[in-house]
Length: 363
Image 1 (cartoon, one colour):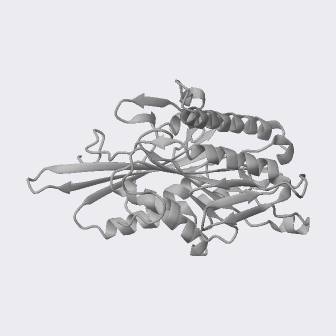
Image 2 (cartoon, rainbow, N blue to C red):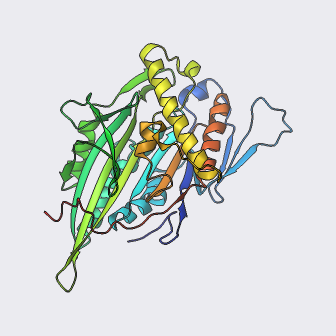
Image 3 (cartoon, rainbow, N blue to C red):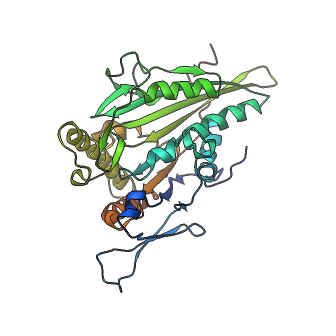
């Protein structure tokens, strides 16, 4: 399988890959005569951001990432260069995580899901479904079993989006073999792209969204769509070897200031919990990269516990930081870029998961 894009085949330990995508100016920003303060060089991975309040002589702030995607970037190219190498690794038994981070209204859900029609607007998740089953179809010397589950973390509660009662709170458990997992989470065996899409659409109906001033359908929860791919092949001596890769596709809720979103009541309560878990994520990233912390505070939020393996553990991880180009979002844009810049230094130790105890292919 091709490993085109960012993720090298062998590197131990390997850093979290961080890429940045900037959306185009919105119609409203154009109507309001907002200025674009962002410049991107997709050849070098450099971004500069100009402070609209500063003196004209002040140099723009520079940042460098593994890859950058500007307002003209296409969904297919983004998928092929960021997510596809991770998906290919999961097919061979590694764990992988792709997560989108950024302020509300910067295009996280567009990046992760996009629109289903026309096909060129599909995001990482639907393209992942297609890629997995194409690769399985093209592989003739192995058996595969694919399972999917879908959850959200809303107001610090873990909810099963595929359950008959999605408002039920589920517990997080830890196990020496499985790591952190969700007790009683529904998981479906899926045999093709259509079945996988049905699982996603069934779960989406149960997601918590709510309008804010920044975004009509703002995601008020973090969602994690998980795909487990088991593969087995028979050796010449007749023994079976099973590998199981786990792929987490994570759409984080927006980081934001309440004053900008006009959040009150329930929206404000949600925003407080969202910001709590995102700052816990920031603290975990900080502890992992500062080199002096004895303790990494994974347990400070449900989100960080769920992503424990993805940040500093047995997983190949890509973070897609999403940002807007306009002058009035300067503070949030700088904050997103600093957050992402720090994450580049997290070292993970991915390994192939051989013969896991809970493999269903044995049964």
